[in-house]
Length: 151
Image 1 (tube, rainbow, N blue to C red):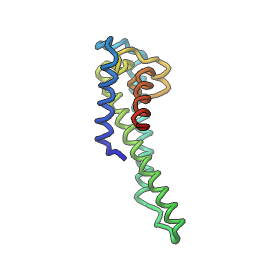
Image 2: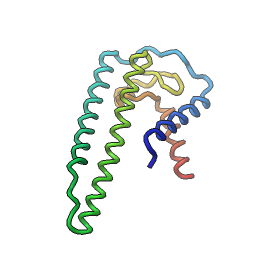
Image 3: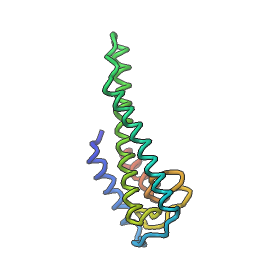
Image 4: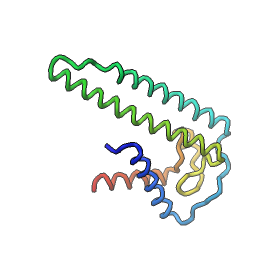
């Protein structure tokens, strides 16, 4: 399992590779797709929701399960703890993504793909709060990740 800093660095590297593949990148922000106040409210609410989930998982991890009395109980406890740690890591990454999206909103870049600079489909912005990539660039990023995992 990669440490968080390695994952962030790898994602930045992949983003740069995607940028290099797209020669017609637009450097100017596109018109705001959804009202800034509404988008900010959506992002803030999602940050609160993610934070509440994080705190719930952190509490569950602190409390532990007491390590069962037999091998099966111990194995089950270990599996549950591993799942909780994985969920906690996912929530940390989700919060960072939302905070990044909020910063892009402050810069006037909300609704603009961070890779190609094109406008992100309003339906995608509505469905995936905090997204900073258009569907095409997100697919390319995920396909690159899948290829690397298979290699």
